[in-house]
Image 1 (spheres, rainbow, N blue to C red):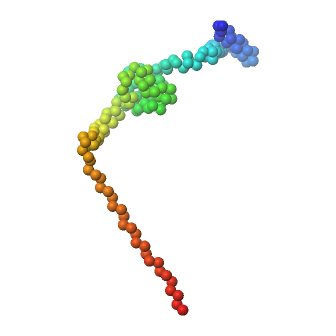
Image 2: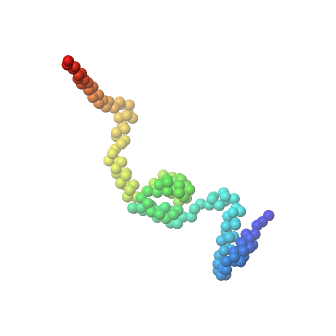
Image 3: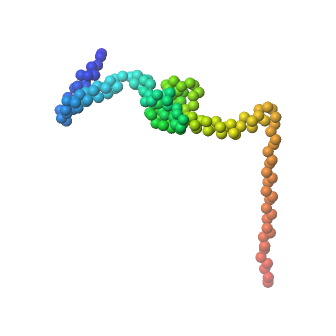
Length: 162
C-alpha cells in the first residue's frame, strides 16, 4: 500500500486552517512541513540515521596553524576531542573517514602539535626506558629509614603522705 503523504499533509493543513486563519504562504509551508514529518515517521529509523552528516566546511582547510575547525558543526578548537565527536554520534575514526583524512591524522592545531612534539623530544622518554629494555637492571632506589620509635614518658604517680 502506498501512502500519499501530500494528500495527508493537505488534509492536516486544512484542519489547522479551520482552527487558525493562515495566509497562502503559511498554508503552503504547513503542507511542506507536515509532508516531511509524515515521511520521517513512516520510514524505518535506520534509513533516517544512516545518512552521513553534511560537512559545513572544507576538511582540507579545517586543520589550521592555531585552530582546528570541526567539519560537521563548524566550531573551532585547539583539539577535536573524542567527546566532541560523540556529540555528533561518531568516533574519531569515522570522522577521519568522513573528512577523507588518513588513518593517523591528528585532529589538533599545527602549532600545538609542534609544541607537544618538542616537549616530548626534550623529555627523551625513550632514553629513560633504555635501561629497562636492554636487560640491565636499574639501580635500586634508596629506601627511606623508618623514623625512630618514640620513647614513652614515665607517668608520675601521686604520692600519698600521711
